[in-house]
Length: 52
Image (cartoon, rainbow, N blue to C red; front, side, top):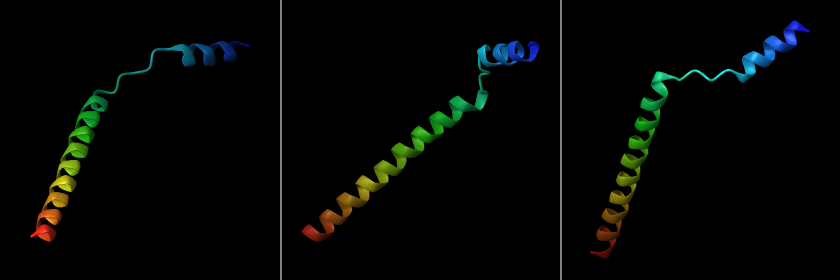
């Protein structure tokens, strides 16, 4: 019976904050924006190359 309450108290604890989680989110966001910019730039270059 005690094991049930131990598991319950473990489940209800506040989750630990990961220090690097915020850095990972910012880095992934920046990388996504960078690669989106590259893709848009390549698209414009191709359109300009074909349009003459």
